[in-house]
Image 1: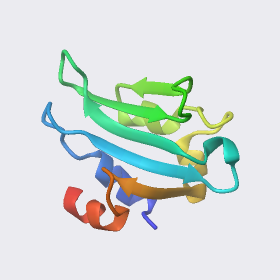
Image 2: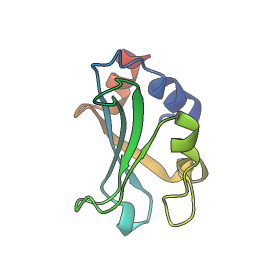
Image 3: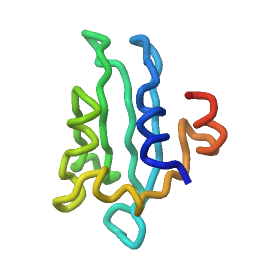
Length: 107
């Protein structure tokens, strides 16, 4: 399991205006959030880092944030933030690969 501090290090990865970070995850015992995505990518025009959630496959629950703090404390999980629910989060993939292996690459 990746701790919140390790996740914070992972999300500090510099995209350099080119690279993306895409993380598949689920929230324990919550069918609504059983197949979610989050990540970091450069904004198209400014190339500044943009943090995002894709919480449902239909795209209706997609959110974007300019800072890590906005992203991690946004109350998008039925009134709770990623920080609030971290102990219930299971990361299944990082960029389509095993999360433990990918974590080591990014930090």
